[in-house]
Length: 353
Image 1 (cartoon, rainbow, N blue to C red):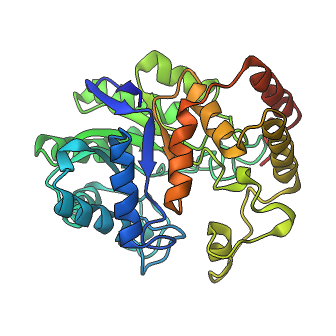
Image 2 (image 1 turned 180 degrees about the horizontal axis):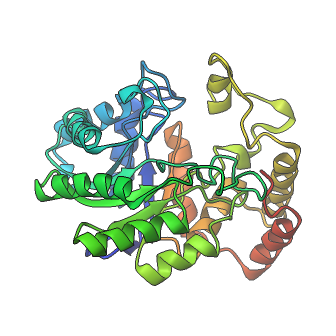
């Protein structure tokens, strides 16, 4: 296992970050424990979770993933071996604090609730799960979708400052060591960094955004900010929610898969990834992998790992065999020919969804 410096914290995190969002929905507690056992045996020292998980999101399973991690800490006594990241949900989820915009009271309450579920007295990295404003993520990253002059034009430093100040309090209390962002933009990162400097508050050390062969929109703009400002970049969904495996081709919905479970939810809307261009791109990437006798998922994971601005890639798995294969991917070498063929597919489908 290789390790990378994490922001300006002095920590070193494994190049593989263990994602956990399936535990408590697609996976049982024992499955989650087995994955943590295996990941740490392979040198993974970085776990990522959220108060929102498990996914697909339901009121019944919210918080369950943190509870599963907590019982593993209690059982194994390995809390000090793990750099633990979790996230506070942003606005819009009715069963989490009424779905309202974050404020000081909510931040303080959410931190304590996560600590209780995780059965620990500190969180290494506490992240804002998504912005308190409209942002170009979750299928809104194509030109012409968002008009920033019409949406959230009233955003002021005061709201950012209130949340950042509350995060500063939990850092002072020793409940949180470092803070970070998720699903944010170059402007969002720089706004928080500016306010941190202005008010002598903790800085954002990381940003986790979606990044994969199907979504490279953070390169180069967010990527430049991360490199210039020493903000660690943590790509999530490097397999595009499993789509890059090809398992959803021809409208397939394998039983127990994420899209299958999501289809059972009330008012289910089609995934923003489930469009013809995405399926065509996946088909071409599978052909590249086959040409070089590679597993397409391993090829996709290693491609993300090779990006020079990436600190640690967040992976997930619904069974132990998948987890083993995913971790093995980081030991691969992708030849210049493979990368050239990947680039040809990218030029055809630069932003398929």
